[in-house]
Image 1 (tube, rainbow, N blue to C red):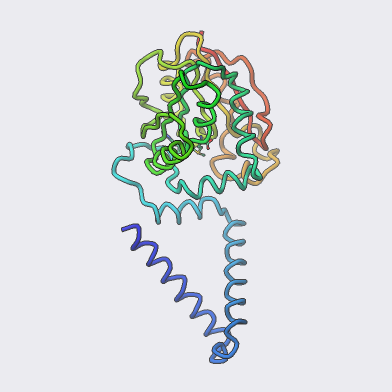
Image 2: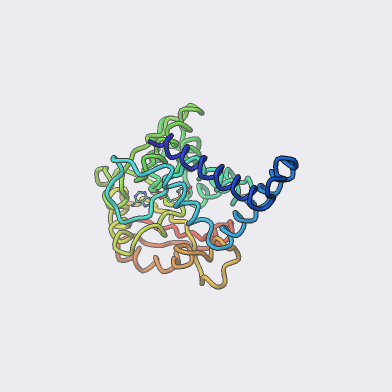
Amino acid sequence: MIRHRYLILLLAVIVWATALAVYLLGKRWLLFGAGAVALVVAIHMVLVLIAFALGGASLVGFLLGWIHPQESETPVTSSKLIHWARSYDLLVWLLTLGRDRVFREKTLDLALIAPGESVLDIGCGTGTLAIAAKRRVGSAASVTGIDASPQMIARACKKARNVGSEVTFATADVENLPYAAGTFDVVLSTVMLHHLSEDARLKCLGEVRRVLKPGGRFLALDFSGAAAERRTRVGRMHNHARFNLLRLIPQLRAAGLNPLESGPAGFRDLQFVRAVLA
Ligand SMILES: C[S@@+](CC[C@H](N)C(=O)[O-])C[C@H]1O[C@@H](n2cnc3c(N)ncnc32)[C@H](O)[C@@H]1O
């Protein structure tokens, strides 16, 4: 089915580009084939730029979501899941200007992760942070990553296999974590909370509290501050703009998690909050 979708998309692009070239250049396009190709490529690039200017991420997300449809093992959730796993890594690489690894290491520093600690990464995406966490906690300690998108989890498993990392990945919803109470020393959440509705976020915080050991830490890293004051276009768009991590602080307290430190995460408009289960 996925292959059919690629084929339909490819055929549509070819038909559209050919029709455009014929329309613009008439029959002469046969003589000026190279010129026609260059023109069509240029027009496509302009269209892509316009699409990005008009809210590219959601457009690309929609298109990629259509190519990689949601699979049946996806948990039923109101949250916005990401199914375009391969492209997600590329997007992160571009947004961090190739410094994804530095971003992950800095996140682990903010969580104060130490060797031997058990870690859960919720909404782990393609698993980059969980794999980095495993390097830090060592072979004797467990690291688990969950995401409600089976495509993200499949890619995370593949990445872990490729580097020989023993991280456990599972498809699960942050509103209903499949772990016993008091299982983890640390729970991480990076740029995931803005994907949840208000209700789902409260349930998620309740679950974080439940699965943490007494004295355990929760690190949330996400978009923050007034949307209009954000420096990047990514920080000002759609769900990112609507979300403000600092508003989470009272909700953390209500969930029984004591926020001890917060501030800029050192990457663009992202901030962090570190809370402790008393
Ligand atoms: C922007 S990505 C961040 C991924 C990863 N944490 C990172 O830092 O690269 C947000 C992730 O949260 C996942 N997600 C959204 N809602 C979720 C839910 N209710 N349960 C589990 N995962 C969820 C999405 O599928 C997506 O992979």
